[in-house]
Amino acid sequence: MPAAKEMNFKFRFVRDQNTIGLVAKKGTATTRELILDKEPIDYADILDSTCRDQRIALSIAPESTLGENTRKALQADQTLVLEVSRGRTNDLERHIDRASSAIQAEQHRQELINAGKADHFHSIQCSTCQATIDLSDFNRTSYVYCRYCESIIKSSGEVVTPGDSYRICDECGMFDRVRGYTQFNFYFLLVVYGFSYRHVYVCDNCAVHIAKLALLRNLIFILGVPSAIYMWIKAITGRDPSLQALAKANALARKGKCNEADEIYVQFSGPYPEHPALLRNRSLGHLYGNNLNAAASLLSRSLKSCNNYLPSLQLARRLKQVASKIKEPNQM
Image (cartoon, rainbow, N blue to C red):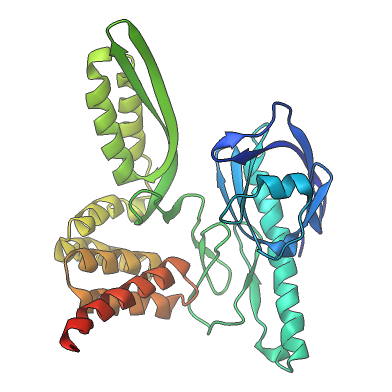
């Protein structure tokens, strides 16, 4: 069902990484549309959303009707980026996802009814973010993937790995615990000194790698050392006991040491039998180890357990491209 109440917020448009204007504008997320400074966007035209810190990126359908200011802020890839005030970005994204997913699912249901295929419609509600997951185009599998919050749930609705903790890493593309980190870099060049920082969302392995580099860069300046050490400690502590060794398995997989990685991955088969993301990690490990057949087999198992798992569907397309390039010389 769409969100039950309106949500008011303050925002500024963002274009080419820079905010537009000095004064925040008023926005409202209703049950039917997103209103940005009095300019509405129908939820049916919002195809996807991504949230990072105070900014939310909305993928807008090409044929959408937009107001003048909204259209000017739209980027070349049909993405609209907003910087939301007072830390309400996550709440806004959830509100939009709940409403837009329900509306789009209902539109699809009506299309199937009109085509005489009403019995083909099938959807469930994500237990984590309450978005509507339309599964009409997919066969029933043990797991279901929510592309809105990246959670993996059972077909019964039970959450297996919540997307706010376990998802695909922006940096390395592996499934692992992903969290936000602030990376500081201090510099001192004769009479010029200062610092820079950035906020990243990465997995435990990538966080440790970034922390090591930051520690080396900032060691002589001392000031940046505490933040680098904190980042390192944060990345190696507090893990879910059942996935304690996942970072190690991923590190081995990325080095192409697929057999060593598999020895660890199989330990997860008890609490997480045929988990689609773990199978995808194994597939990537064999791909890095130049074992294309094993990679394809593991990926097939991933999609068999969750056939709407988008990261595996994307990797399957990559593997198909690799396989076609290998066959081309033999066909000449």
